[in-house]
Image (cartoon, rainbow, N blue to C red; front, top):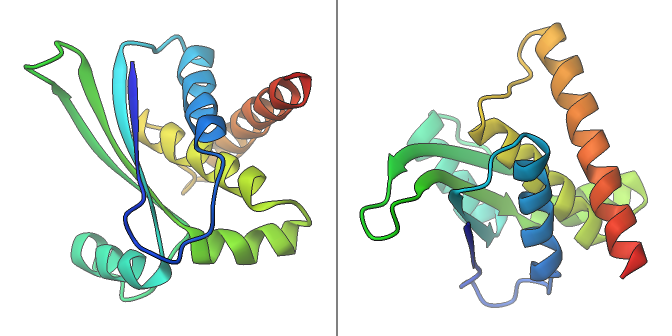
Length: 149
């Protein structure tokens, strides 16, 4: 399993990248998925709005986008599951609203994006109930493990 984190826009706040990788690994292992690669991009609202416009036709920013790729990487022989993009601008706002830190908010968004890559969604009430319960359970595992370290 390889999780690549990209953060090449200057001025973005620091985020615990090891914790984000751990959140994705725990999400995958919880669902018995492990030989998969994912790229996580940390960006700002401007790039997020551009991506949302280009790929979803929505000229607004959002907190997280997930782009499923689902192909076998010829170099590694592993499944390249896809890309998760998190807007740190949005994550900062949401962390304040949820009364927790930026790292915790980014962990939550990384879990959310990984679940989307694995086919989970929240458009229908039943889907939302299942996805929210799963992401809350995984979030609690990640936070508990981080506190034990």
